[in-house]
Length: 480
Ligand SMILES: NC(=O)c1ccc[n+]([C@@H]2O[C@H](COP(=O)([O-])OP(=O)(O)OC[C@H]3O[C@@H](n4cnc5c(N)ncnc54)[C@H](O)[C@@H]3O)[C@@H](O)[C@H]2O)c1
Ligand SMILES: O=C(O)CC[C@@H](O)C(=O)O
Image 1 (tube, rainbow, N blue to C red):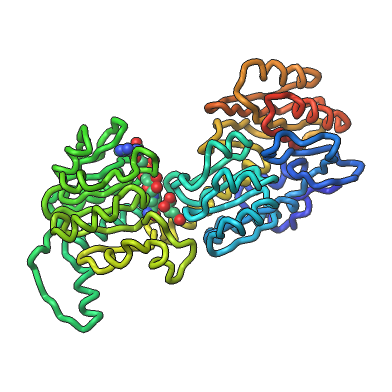
Image 2: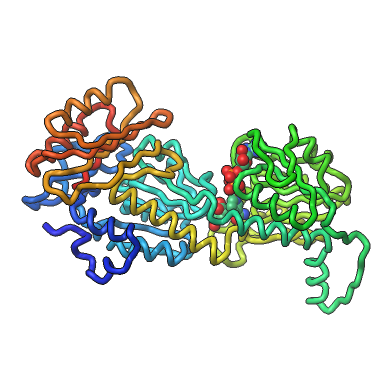
């Protein structure tokens, strides 16, 4: 039975990057994935579903080899064309939607797909994922992964990838623009002039040179911003839970309070975590300098918005920029009112507050780079099982594949991290020659990859089934 890559037109294999060439060459023999029934006499396997209800019954399923053209991909939230193209080039069936989906529609759609790509608005909770019977991998086409239940995904053999830094520069540049905009109040001046009001003022308007920027969270975004701010003559201090080397002359301070007391501008670049929820609330705003500015481009949960409104009304905080909100609309349009009901109106009437619809990473450069990075990781996972850069699985990969050689195959065995599994797996593999093997664990999930030679096609199904029958099994895949 022909498999996917051989169905891909030859011109798509020519002149493409080396990764494409490698993929097309090796995928031609990969099996697996789907639970579709097949009576094909040449079919051997398999690939069990994420299986919320335990392992599939072997007797109930005859599994067929997979074509790349069998792989179903759902992309939500307007994933960039670069990313879509890489997936389509593999022959995968790609459905791309511009917005996120309400939970009931998401549940209906996710039941069928092997791969889902999302950005920040799609919540892949355990409740949603338990319906994802065929899902093997999630691509977050963004930095944040707080919208995915990473632990549930790992425990059910679903690998998650993101793009850790492709939009960091875009966020940092937006922050620079907003720092100047707030210091000069030019967003208000522009709105006034749009309404026909000429209001030429200098009171309360400042240069940023010589002012202190306090960065909370000195990771990819925070450190980029640090460099840009210093180049404009700002002093930079930062607070981070980790001890990190400052770039340029930036200086780490030991506590959040130290940062708040010492800064004219405070920018937030921490992940959404229990520890960062309402990290900036009434006490922290009170600790800030009089007339300081607050900018949040992290997650909406990090700032207590009613507390900010109070602090701005009192004049304690001279200006703010919010790119993220506690409940963000799932699609473009006029949904902002409904989502933020309690405080939307008040936010909109405040002076010197910049409200942007989560566009920190929304540049052509960032979206294009994210598309390439995440889609490439997805292809490497689907076709080869490589977990390099995964956010919820141990990172496992093996160097060059020999799958196009006869009697070679790759076994991927995701399993519970409990004693004795490797011995049992290696007992099963011991009838063959294990060319290469790598295994690693992360929390209670372990990932084993082995390249095996001297395997007859007729032996593959029983090899697969023996692995499936181990009590430690989360998911088995065999590629050849
Ligand atoms: N607005 C946007 O469009 C946009 C774009 C990119 C990222 N983000 C958000 O910004 C966040 C930061 O992005 P990043 O790429 O810099 O992440 P990162 O992981 O590189 O850096 C985050 C930093 O925060 C620190 N940190 C974690 N908890 C902390 C705490 N309680 N107190 C102080 N520091 C803490 C970490 O040690 C790390 O250094 C992301 O998690 C994402 O939610 C938003
Ligand atoms: O593009 C998005 O939806 C999210 C952008 C940003 O918050 C991220 O986490 O990378």
